[in-house]
Image (cartoon, rainbow over all chains, first blue to last red; front, side, top):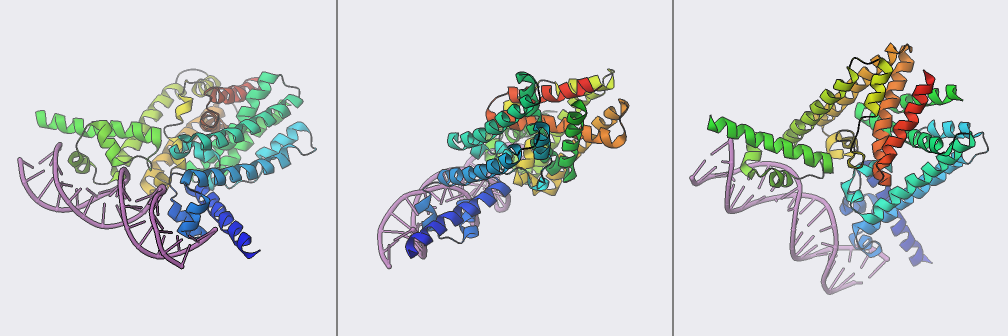
Amino acid sequence: MVTPMNTAAARDRLVDAAQDLFAAQGVGATSPRAVLAASGVGQGSLYHHFPTKHDLAVAAVGATVDDALARAFRTLDSGSPALERVIAYLERPRDALAGCRIGRHTADQAVMDDDGLRDVLTAYFVRLLAALTTIFRETGLPDDVARDRAHAALAIIQGGYVLARATQDPDALTAAVRGFVGLLDRHQ
Amino acid sequence: MVTPMNTAAARDRLVDAAQDLFAAQGVGATSPRAVLAASGVGQGSLYHHFPTKHDLAVAAVGATVDDALARAFRTLDSGSPALERVIAYLERPRDALAGCRIGRHTADQAVMDDDGLRDVLTAYFVRLLAALTTIFRETGLPDDVARDRAHAALAIIQGGYVLARATQDPDALTAAVRGFVGLLDRHQ
DNA sequence: GTCTATATGGGGATAGAC
DNA sequence: GTCTATCCCCATATAGAC
């Protein structure tokens, strides 16, 4: 029982450490050495569990995407009226100055040049866009308008993160959300 | 006359090459060696004109910001009615899959950890936000609402870039813009 | 499965000749 | 001002013992 437990622990600690470092610095800017230091695991263990950095990145970014989707759908699939669910999602508290743990990877060449990693990003945004489009359709909008509005809603979040980091002001994200929700609200 | 011309040419070619590479790959992911190769200039020249990578980055990102601001204000300061100027700015053609040449740096630790470089980014977005806030105020909105709406408008662009890259679909940006402009239009 | 030792290549920069 | 040669360090592994 001891060996399997330690085995799992080492792998999990590597993935946990990698998730945090990749979210904070990006994949390209994070070395396997840094992950080793943060996890407290030895070099041999890393390359046993993850033969290449790519493998570690797919595991870590994949786990972050799974976490984020689970949390998003807890809000998007709640029993509230459609528009309220979108607004609740937009207004969820976020660590604006840290940037989006997933969206930031779109600026990371190490991620975008890696087919497997890029697919993980794509899947995340496609899933969210589909869910938001469905919700906007429930408010009575035609398909194409619902789809555009879903894109706008997600763009507000991702762009809000960019503005917050660029201006070093966390309220830039909440301001963008307020500006968009203000338009949505009066609108219906 | 020959020497000064060549001097200027070498420096300019370095900055031009650096602007393109930084826009395409980020500052952290671009080596001085890569800039040398792209510019066709020799190693000694680079370190003569720019003692450190930081100096080159400030010059190159600064030039990109200056270019972008000049182009933005050509649209934002045109003689058209206020709302039309905002919409024209939002709908300007953009290379969505390439990402924003400036906004993408918010995800680059090499930029964000460098005070001088970060200030260049901050200045760009602060200037645009101020201009957009002023324009929305001209449409008759109260100050705080105008400010929020300005944040939303810029977030749409920046977030649209992120969505386009994540989904590998340039129309994700135009969809976000359509979704936002649709709300703006009906609203006033 | 985990460890220590080692290897190759590139990043960022310096030295000194021309 | 520009060139070539050189330097040190770290990123990303690989090798083989325990």
